[in-house]
Image (cartoon, rainbow, N blue to C red; front, side, top):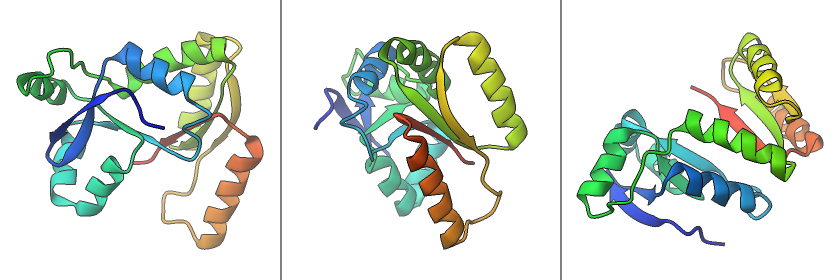
Length: 170
């Protein structure tokens, strides 16, 4: 499966030329086909990091889609001839995607952050998106996981059978 987005290479990152509505629609309509893949939101900091860290660059370019989560990146896309380029900010994407997921019946799993943050997120999501399907949340330890812990986390997520896994790790 290929996505419908043109690409603009900035700092070696193959950024999608997109807008918020197109990005949300694409992911929602193709959630099943995107199973096992990931989406990135690249801001200026992560773009600069990718420029000097080949592993980070490989992670950005290994994504099914990498959207410009920074106005300077979208503006650079425009300067390079993609006049329809727009910023696709991660928080804006999430809000729009949560609304669309209610209609599409998609479930969500949240991995990362502190338990306090996840508790606050759950409360806000249930308030702002009544009926949202949260299949699970997990706050991993703030350190590298052992192989056993990693396998347990993967099993937990797989057992929850979410349509979408949101990962928030610093």
